[in-house]
Amino acid sequence: MKSLSTNSYQAFALVGRVLLATIFLVSGFGKLVAASATMGYIASVGLPAPMLGYAVALTLEIGGGLLLIVGYQTRLVATLLAMFSILTALFFHHAFGDQNQMFHFLKDLAIAGGLVQVIAFGAGAYSLDGRRGLPEVRAAW
Image 1 (cartoon, rainbow, N blue to C red):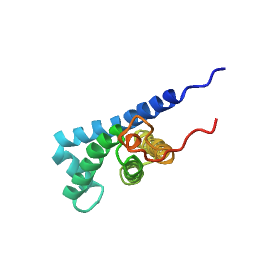
Image 2 (cartoon, rainbow, N blue to C red):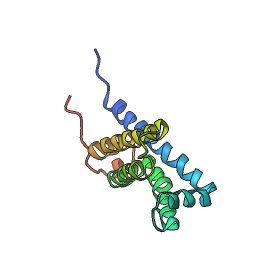
Image 3 (cartoon, rainbow, N blue to C red):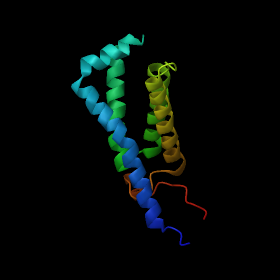
């Protein structure tokens, strides 16, 4: 069986970043068009400063999503988005008796898991970080 080329692995890294970023971008743009509903939802779970929470979520989702796609400061961005995903799961999707909330909880954890892979292996060659020559983990096989 023929192994994949280095270019194939680099293309997979790019595709993975784009797929991970998509959920953040869609969610962020959803928050943009429904700002008051988002702030109301933040307040409804008992978090203080809904406006600040909204601004942080918007910045992380849209800004982080775009940075993840282009691969700039990728490990830092992936770390912030992974923490955001875990906190979102814990604060907003912890009603385990509700199957829909359990699904969203597990989805957020799975997204965090994908982001941990980005943290571990870097953005790949097809990224701004790759163009700057930042180190990445290469497959040993």
